[in-house]
Amino acid sequence: MVSAMPTTADPRTVADTVTDPELPMLTLADLGVLRDVRVEEGIVVVEITPTYTGCPAMGTMRADLVHALHEAGYPDVDVRTVLAPAWSTDWITADGRRKLAEAGIAPPGPAPVRTDGPVPLQLGPTRRTASCPLCGSADTEELSEFSATACKALRRCRSCREPFEHVKEI
Image (cartoon, rainbow, N blue to C red; front, side):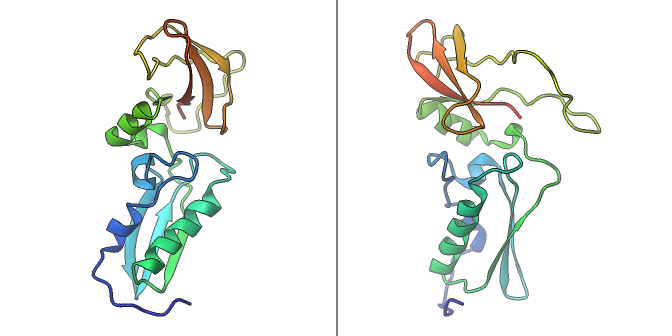
């Protein structure tokens, strides 16, 4: 339990500053995983959604949110995981997409169309495309379906020959 400190900071404003541990150029709000921040009976309740099942960054996200809110003077924080609806790359904000591109990471295109159920499984090679965030060329190739994290692919631009990561559409 953290001792209570007087605060005038809005808990949502504080939570909005917490960055993603795997994509530190983005806040959790930019990424779209920060779903809700509210106060219930004196407890700050934060709801987050993982980018995919088993995301290893969830524990760090939770700890970073609790730490930021404690530092802002909120002694009681409850971070909850919300699984429905499932997160989609469509939830990344325009500002978040801009920040990804500025960091040399190709932002995702539109997520696969979902109907009433899960996205249908497609067997065989994936046909993702991404423009180079460095030179803007659409002439790119996928080198590896997985990059530093499972949510990114490694690509190379055929025009400028530079490698870059691409956040995969989910």
